[in-house]
Length: 182
Image (cartoon, rainbow, N blue to C red; front, side):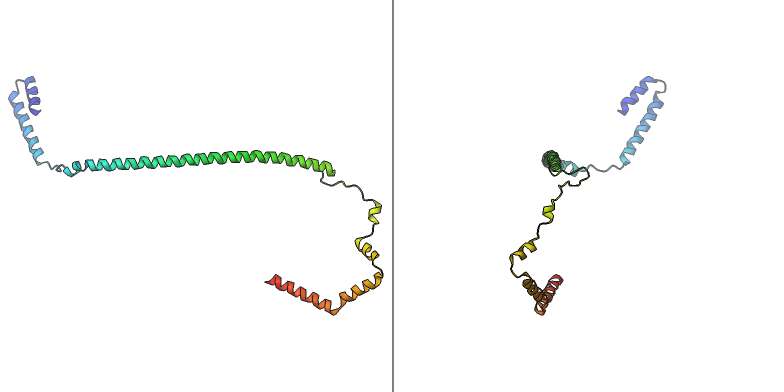
């Protein structure tokens, strides 16, 4: 290539032919000497021989990455399906809550109408009759059926004030205290 360049330059300038040719030949020699002394690392043949094994390893990694991506995509699809199902369930539950809220409001209205509850929340009950206020209590009805009521009441009073009854009451109170403490 250098020679063709030299010939091309020489053909353009025919007068200074010899000087230019001499100068270019000197440059060529110096360049070749520099190339000879230039230290270049020898080509590594190991790298070239290992290319097939490196290519196989890269292909294996690529396959593993593809499989990993496929499994991740499957998991994402499952999660999306689950999320959609949960979203559907949430929406149906919201609808049920709205329906039940409407039913509760209707029943509250019916209860207010039935019990005549006014807007302040006070129950409007009918007044009690005087007859129900003057009715005898259960204790009076039972005592009315027993002959000699005064003697029975005295016997109850004696039993209530007796020392055995008081001891029994004290014992029961102590038992409850111990049960509470444990």
